[in-house]
Image (cartoon, rainbow over all chains, first blue to last red; front, side, top):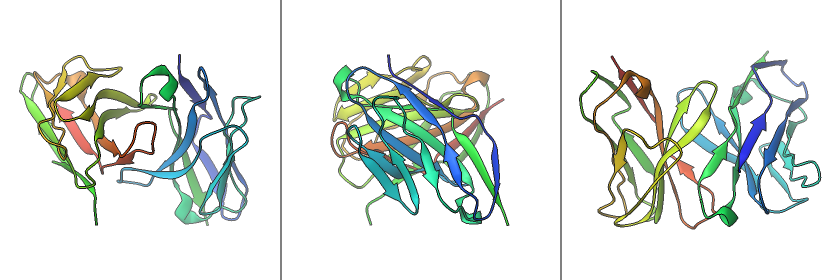
Amino acid sequence: GNSVTQMEGPVTLSEEAFLTINCTYTATGYPSLFWYVQYPGEGLQLLLKATKADDKGSNKGFEATYRKETTSFHLEKGSVQVSDSAVYFCALLNDQTGANNLFFGTGTRLTVIP
Amino acid sequence: DAEITQSPRHKITETGRQVTLACHQTWNHNNMFWYRQDLGHGLRLIHYSYGVQDTNKGEVSDGYSVSRSNTEDLPLTLESAASSQTSVYFCASSPQLADTQYFGPGTRLTVL
């Protein structure tokens, strides 16, 4: 089946620190992979995505590379800001299984302190 | 600007009552989804629709129903609310299958 496992939180970092949030997945075939971000009191927003192996998604200084050999899609940012404080969700979409819905990880809460 | 809205944003109800949560999108997307968000589970799919008159059950559909009478709306109904349905509910839509989904702001539902 399809599933996503992501790093347990919460994660607390100082401003300008390096961020990594680990995400691994299980799926048949070649899913698309996503990172969504949820700011306090808001819905989910797409942060970045990758649709095939070795693709790198990037946005707002965040990056993630689709690694089929390790079934991973780790989220990284070189220098976090207080405004990056949010909950981050890794997700996959596997249209080959006939279900075009997203499978989500449990979310990782990031707090960045000044 | 096109958008996706949900109403109400907050709802408190009693066990056994019927509750309907509204979802409205102005993108003219064919695909619409309902998820619930619970601590320790991330988001889980309740129901989805690929077009008018099409509805499908998701992972956690028991106790919920949806109807799709037009492209813009996918209301979610809890037939007889239970305390286990206390959650935050998100609606989403996408233009194409296997495409990015766009989420509404969510509805926080409390069942007492």
